Image (tube, rainbow, N blue to C red):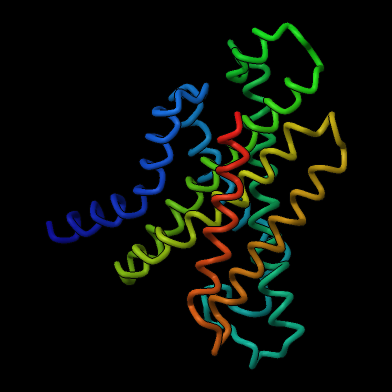
Length: 241
């Protein structure tokens, strides 16, 4: 029984960022239906599985990604692990999961929640392109939080304080990276190279956060600033809708 209470507490802590963002969308009457919000969360959880599969396929040997690596393993190996093995695979998993979700949204009944763009009557206009990027950013933001929810709950199984810490830092980080990728993917037709740029920026932000979290001597305030500044920048873009 105690184990069930602990599991429930872990899930509640990990889900707090998700709940706050959902309430923010509802208060602002953002045109994202609840069913799309839920699908975005599921896409984020699915991206975690894709990232794990990519790491298993391409990086089965090398440095442990569970926190058991440091600059003492060699700077080349250290940077490769932080930016490529972790950040790049996780962001690539996000790209693939969001790609499937957007394809589902376009082919499914009702499609993506684009009611406002339909009201403009300006297909292909600048306003519609901006709207697509904004909706893509919101979807990616939620997917990033879905990724962080599962990851934080799994880490918290070992230490509940870790779940609380990750809810305060890793969730904004993953949400910010997901928002950038989502904006790039739905803005692909307006700028084909935008996806690559958004992916690169997400990998750099993600890698820098990981680098500062695990490097000795770096004040904890720095990774917190990276996570929250990236998150609020993404939220500002979505808020402009």
